Length: 274
Figure (cartoon, rainbow, N blue to C red):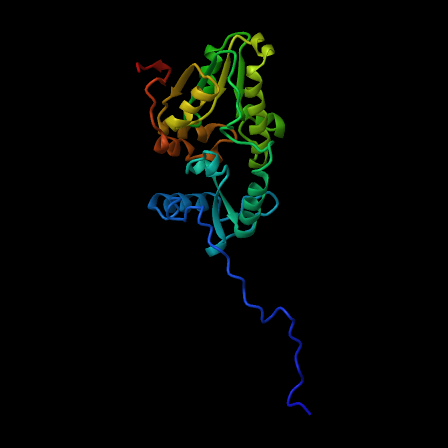
């Protein structure tokens, strides 16, 4: 008789793990900036802001240790920066699923991008109005627009899709809203766009190269930057419905802000010289 009863061992239990070839085309974490003190500070701030809770729809689990991931809502490959307002807390599982979904969808022509390479040039004048959150961009446009002008504002588009207040829409509406915005901008090259005297595009765009991108690709003829101070913007957000949860966005905008020579800079409603 055998000394002991034999135990069942599945056939795969002794298999050696297959070695994975390193992805030499992708920069490592250090090269992508994830080891810098600035990123570590931003990561801590996002985790505290989100109460260490996964922000993926339907999840909400508390995350700690290696399960606590801080994710770019919009991929860095699509032009996103490290602004606090553009980051979210995810658990490892939801982060992995989001990454797979983004990689899978990246080959689809309908995939959304903040700066789509296929964007045609507008046949009507376009003014780009930029600035930190709650700086007064929408107010500036309302004060200067004409009767037949077209206004393209991501907050307006997303809130209509979500059926919420102007700043109450959730992140799940971002992709559809960006696609709709890009569609509206792409239609500016068509003959029927000429029923509008001009178009206004409202965006944050703290980086000079991104504002220049709109000039080069869409044909923006005028760029206005509302340089309202971070303290003033943050104070406004605390009193505005739906914006108190987005506090910190104005300070992050100023951290990443770079000036462009041809921008028209406005501070407190007073236009500055170039």
